[in-house]
Length: 416
Length: 114
Image 1 (cartoon, rainbow over the protein chains, first blue to last red):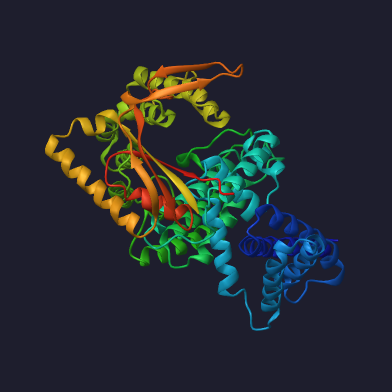
Image 2 (cartoon, rainbow over the protein chains, first blue to last red; image 1 turned 30 degrees about the vertical axis):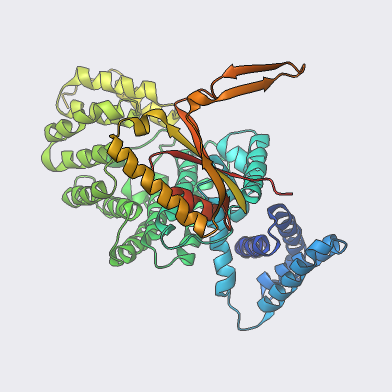
């Protein structure tokens, strides 16, 4: 029984890898997203029928391409416009059959093209997310809809509109030029991180029928890292995701409430996964041009490798936030820097840095929660309570709400 | 692919500039336009008289026509000119529009080709 299960899982993994490769090639060759999707769907169904019985083909990618090509021939034989495309499909399938071929640069580039096209800035962010999950990630629109708690028809409509815009507005299927690359790569990373957070922040265990988007985002990011091994930012984002996932078990109490970093049971962190992610951070830093994701990962890595909250290298964290602030001079970065500073220089110094941010962060619940915490440490309890109340009024997240409500409950007078 | 480049200017974007500055900026726009017309990226186009000169004609479903003073959309930004682009794809159109030298808002719209 278990043996069969392992076979299924590995088939799923192979299929997931190969279907992304296949759809990317088909989109390039056919220039028709819908047709490419249908052919991939049919080839995947065929694979799930044949592979468990016949075993994994020696070249699963070529097997899928050949199958897709056969389906395409059935469908398009009578349409002269597709004749040259079919020829190219045939050439591609033959190319993939060559024994030396090991996932060659051609197929690799197609997946990168696909990712950049899905995240093109001329598409809305919602469309970028839906298209990336659907096309690159292989989720169906029902899965995307459930993950984002929107009706399936909404997702389906977003996908239709996005594909129509790609076609009608002439969005090219290519990797951006060097001069455009930094900005466009940032866009891709923003989509992947948004998907990750959607999964990660909702992962309270209660919503088990929701797709694990955090794992999907992690897989997509690892794909990006493999496709752009010389870029530090994808590496940083992947490390960041893995550092979060390695500690996810310790984030929630059995009743689903959130456990903050100082109170987490660090023995429940996955030390091996943290060490692996730390190596990714090191690899990225050695490239010598860290971006915001890599610096954030470096900060989280310092936390994740500290034996305890008190024994954290706070000076190092403040220094990393300083570097992050030069790249990203936002009030949120300034807030996080101030919280680290509190551990080095005390809550009073930190509060003096936090208060001036009020004008820009008044609508941000974590600003008020942070102020509440600093004020409490300074013994200014009334002000702390009013900050916590303000934070509570600004968040809908159940786990965060529970934590703030607990803080606001009357405490036994223990003098602490 | 062919696109229409619609150039919208905020009335106050140029207004705060001195006459000499306006002249210099206008010169940059002219040079930009000529350069890209030369390469064939811009097929055609024109600068338009200000929105205050516009007249709007509306025909309602019953066939009744009304003529009013002013542009069809009243807003801070008004269409100030247009160009017809012939470039390989949207990225090329975005690159071109991004190099427009004046502080305006530009829209790129694919043209229906039959």
